Length: 446
Image (tube, rainbow, N blue to C red; front, side):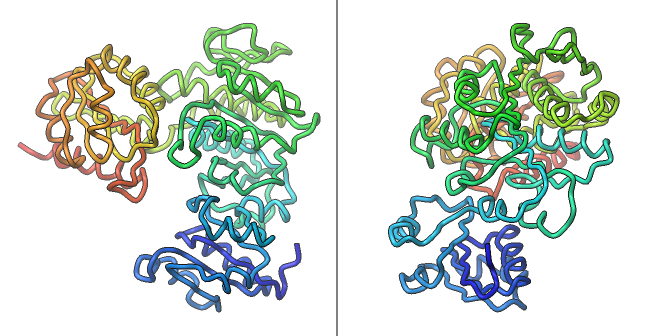
């Protein structure tokens, strides 16, 4: 793709990807247009990053005239592809693409791409940790880590990407050497509308793969099996449920491959069966690119997990606190509940993604003493958590106060929201940090 003197537009500036794209395009002498629906005040931190670069900036509303100036608009994953001005652009044969799609024109090293409803970030981070132990130059990015455009300036041996359905809406050309679909459960239905569309966007990651490529897929997941039956890639089906008919499976805390190669997972620092799934997937991808067994086993033992993913914050006054603020679906909260033992007091809330909470109700009845709900979705959750003792609050602060008053010694408080953060927080990190601050304040009280 020729960039010099070309008019390239960016929709949705953001704090990281948009400014990185602006800098990349400017270095290649493109004429840059930037549009964002937010006000200048809300974008002040982003605009500071590009203050010395000449751009055509339009905020609030994108005029038809500005839209027509560019033949290509690179769209932030936070902007739905069905926005009227993007639909209008495509009707006028103006290209609307993702940053992922833009970068595939320039990537020269093997791509390893990971998607799934739950576990993407942990699997991506674990695989990167393994490969770094192999002394490989690894770029980690996409939906986790850095924007892919930042990988185009430096030499790497592998690019490891976490890929979301939001990114795949406007991506067509991506061709991973190795791709993984961890699982497919209801998520982002508020944006995608239905499971058929959501599943097709997961499958789309594999659409350009050929027999020489490897697709690592979860044999325990019906949709993953369906995807495996349709892909042109060579499939590596794995199971973490001791299903020995799966080519890659777990026996006695050991991953067994079809050629009887084995990788021990005895000394993992990760809680829960869902993290066994993530580990098997990461190890399978490492084996697929010939990472040595001794490196894999050593790196597995030193991986500590990621913040806000079933993170043990500590024990205070006899109460153990777990921060699972990354959880944005009922399914991920179910996994967290299943990973813990003993009496649990549960805190959840946020903005609904239109998922059902009925399966969550079933596990809460078995595992939780009481549920404390907050935020936009609290009443909706309460209506579906039948048979569960529930209290509803407006904020996390108040839900936390209720939880610590209800919990007894030797019991656990689990914060696993099961919903998006966007009713009250910028992202899941912010709500996780808030939860940790509440714990710190609680620990200091006499």
